[in-house]
Image (tube, rainbow, N blue to C red; front, top):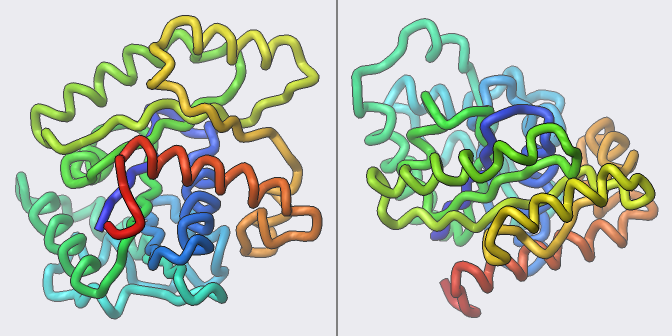
Amino acid sequence: MITIAISSQKGGVGKTTVAINLAHAFARSGRRTVLVDSDPQGSVGLSLTRQSRRLSGFYDLIDDPAVCTADLIVPTRLETLSLVPAGQASVYDLKGSAPGAVLRRLRTFLRDLASLDVEICIVDTAAGFFGATGDVLSAANAVMVPQQAEPLGIRSVPKMLEALTRMRIVNPQLVVLGVALTMMQSRLPESRDAVQALRAILPPEMVMRTVIPRDDLFIKASARGVPAGVMDGGDPMLGIFDNLRIEVERRLGVTAQF
């Protein structure tokens, strides 16, 4: 099983949108995929199932090692795509955990998923690289960093990638896939300039070729609890995230069999 974290130092950059639609793309390709919501706000769960606030999930398992991984998996309308909601993060936040305990439980959780024949695990994380997100990065195989195609924050991206690279001290297997540009508005020169600026300051291999546009379809899809690609007029989104999936597979060097 390959575990891919979708992470960024700040919120509002399209992490959840990328996580949901990339997981959907992998599932559509035939890979048995689980989308894990490790953001205490539960954004993935709220986008895909309105009952997520009442469901046990990631933080329940992190808080209590007796929780069974299989009991946390929520099926979706696509047979190859399942969800593990965030669960009761407030209890975890109040109790805390012994140093190293979260990482040990997280690694057990990922081994359990692999034993259930899951091929791809996409983890939507909270903003920042500390706390539970740091543990996710310590256990993941790869990380992708969504970044708005806007001038604000572009120049901080190299330092953010340096911080992720340092995570390899803890997790030598971690592959930094690169930055995925999101919320691109091609009609605005400021958005185009931001893309050019990022490509100018980063090596080509650190920027995903696929660019995610700003589109009202993402908001409408979230309101309906579905990936954008299944909406009326969603075919272009299917193509965009299929391209992103193919990029990820190539960067990880995966073949037909994981």
